[in-house]
Image 1 (cartoon, rainbow, N blue to C red):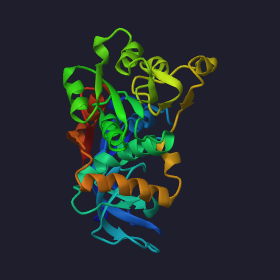
Image 2: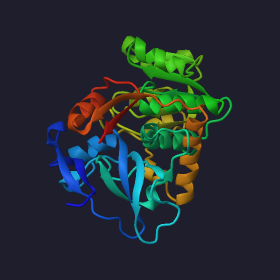
Image 3: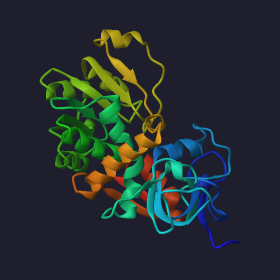
Length: 328
């Protein structure tokens, strides 16, 4: 075994949390264009669940986790721009839930001074997701009215803040008084407890004076899709970026016409990190906002690798607010 052997969270077969196991793994030495990172924290995300379940097919066994931050321990041949001791983070690269991981430099960004590694790990995937949603999926600007579902969740909290920073206003939905208060504290003008209303779209329309919203950001999926569509103004956009409640079943495309020439998109982060420049732009703006204090990142829970099943159970059961982390 090398000095770079340590615990890793392994998906032994496709299935529920019971297929997760902690095993010692030797990651070896970094190759050409790669660095070896000692991981400080790994983000807990729904993409991990989809990969574990086999919805997104990854051959088993594999080391789980896509997002993280840590310190460079060693660099491989041909590496420029990164050196041992550098603090780095990455939004989406499999094999991150481990004490050590080897990463290509193409996925890494530098973590600025003043940003803790745990916070960097917590904001990469969800922060860059929120960033592309408010810049590229729908260019939020002064006067934009946005619907943000699950506004007390990881992406939701960041979306509320980013929409407000860009001059837009937010109609937020959340479950229960505590989560509603979180959304309100982050700047949402209208907050709807979805558990307390019979017709969610009607509540959104009432909050907007009958106008409807310009864009609906929906990471919930099956449970909120119809309400999201019905909440849009004519020529509004529904950005369906996740499926926390399950996948949306096929639907009749003519509904987009009937709703007012609506736009529907199913974006994903990978397509919005198409170039090195795009990754550095998005990460630079997000981490810069964290560094200057204008973007608040809430860490809702920290779990050792041995408690990973509980972390994912808490995520899927929507029992938490903010971002969950695994600490290897």
